[in-house]
Image (cartoon, rainbow, N blue to C red):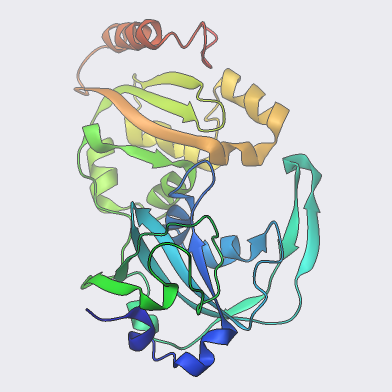
Length: 281
């Protein structure tokens, strides 16, 4: 099998200049992958809680599934990192400046690497020899896609499980398959707070379809809902990036308001979102 370092044409004499970044979210393992899909991976990677990029180059691999990583590019570290603080988010860390290196950039978002990482370190040196498992330099390519990964076409109402950033891109770009599907149904949906696990049950009825309702959420995160407004007011506007969206039930556009409101009430009772979630009524 092809080794990634061979495809990238990184000679062994240069290994000492490379850090490998196994990018994986703390609470949500797929966070860096979702950042990549919406075109924000570089900026996300440049903010680190510690001085993790102590070498001239960073070889970025993005968590996709167990033991499978997506090639995210090779970046040159330019200059020293700057200490930054965001008190509102209770976050302090280092801001790096990087630039994408012209190194097989056509393979970014297309190459998947199979690598079982049996150590905790997320920023190993490329020449590292771990006590257990495979050396980073021996990572092999498992598959190459014809096209770069992107936000997938609409796969069905029962497959919807997207975060706020993805919703923003879907609405901003009016991705045809999503807009077509969500513009032709009313129904009941769920918003989950990834930080607390609390849930909000909402519905689209009257003259609204789910696309119209979710477009309102994409604009400001609360869509006019009193409970969500209060949550964002208490935690800051950026708290909306903790939200995930799914669909509980779809209804024909011809069904009356009372039926859909009744189904909304049913799901609130089933999920107990009044007692333990984000629904106030």
